[in-house]
Image (cartoon, rainbow, N blue to C red; front, side, top):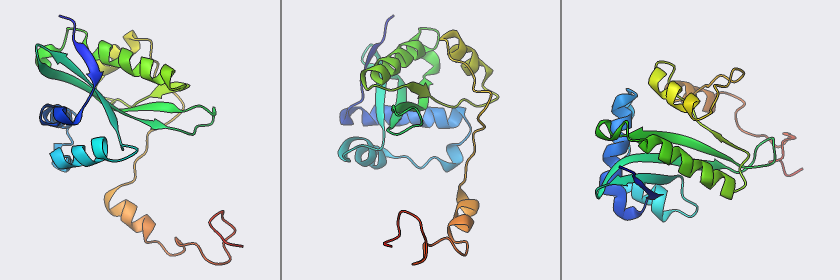
Length: 176
């Protein structure tokens, strides 16, 4: 069975959301998963430019996989980078190369847009995912460590004294 890979459309939202929820359950962040149909509609299909784009994999009329991505337009190489945020294939469709087809679509999209790289993260406990990516030719990045700032730590930093620009600030935001 070869899946049909195509760009997601607004009409896919009812089938796309369960795929995203499935990834949140698999990666154990379902407790903070806040995406709903309206969020997908607005952020993916009604904003210009959209906050994300997605490919979907279809088998027998049903969506069985998705790859959600965005572009980072400016990088040190002066070329954009395609950043994969989510790759998920339903358990029933695993073993049918659906993930590989989705990754090939991302690679084609990246080259068509002049990207110098495709990047993503994978959980350190997801050894099956790591083997899959390495089989495709990807290599783990031994230099960069993935960091995150959220919740109370994000708020504390944002509200820290000296966070706002002042008139004497020599940053590019300054009018002087």
